Length: 107
Image (tube, rainbow, N blue to C red; front, side, top):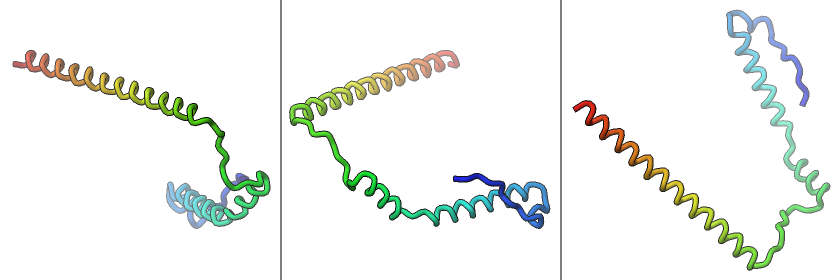
């Protein structure tokens, strides 16, 4: 992508701030034109030429290894859920204590 100075016609620069707005509009038009030039099919063909494949390949693992990974993920999720519940409980108790103290202070 090349960066170049955008041309802003003089008739657009009549009031303060309009020049920057005209520049923004011009930049949007140029970006839109660049997007229209994109060729998605060409990118797909280039990818196929370089790799020779169109599908993803995943590592092959045994069913025992897959089960172990799933169990690790489940245990991690349970631990995270417990921590989250603990944080909510502590927050709830703390808010309750603050409200009670404020009630005692202003009554």
